[in-house]
Length: 249
Image (cartoon, rainbow, N blue to C red; front, top):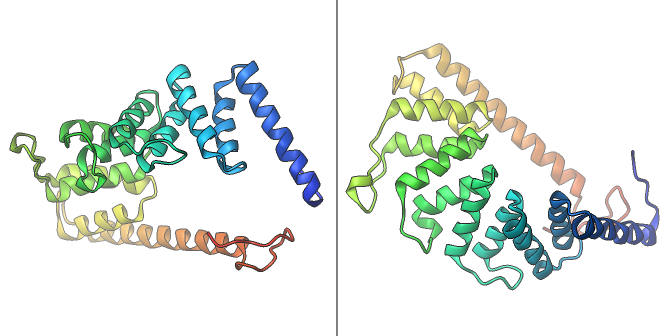
């Protein structure tokens, strides 16, 4: 059902009622998905990051709600909402979110284990990181699949040589295929090059062209989507279709 709100007063009333509905659903009806929505409401509408962080943390700690674990992990990683910036805490909550079934949590926990850029407080752990990224990939994370493929494309040297990940073009091809299926254009480009050069697969010019075409289509689709978003948001300072001024992001 479409909601047709006229004027600032009606919008404010609607948002206030929404907050009341979420609080009732969370605290009285014990609906944990609604508790997460309450956190999102406090974050996005009220801009009360401190209260939002507390809702996410409680919903993760007490109800094991995966998406709330992910959100609190991000607050810890960034030091947002008066939550102390703590990489170890962030990893622990990402890891818990992954255990409870959130794919994005698996992805970020895996990256924190492997990537030196993550500046994790924990030791880099390649076997655990790969396991988490594989879980993200199997859960539908295109980037997770693409990242694993990249690791196998070049091989990865770990701080402990016993945990080195050797170059393996067949595995690189497998994960690139999974990432391409999930819509990652960069993975499709890699697949095209693999078929063109015979890396991990037999040379196949037809398949090389096929995946090149898919990559181009995905890039064009992404660019078109971005143009649509920019058009709908409007130019900063110029009233948009709803009669309100858009602000720079």
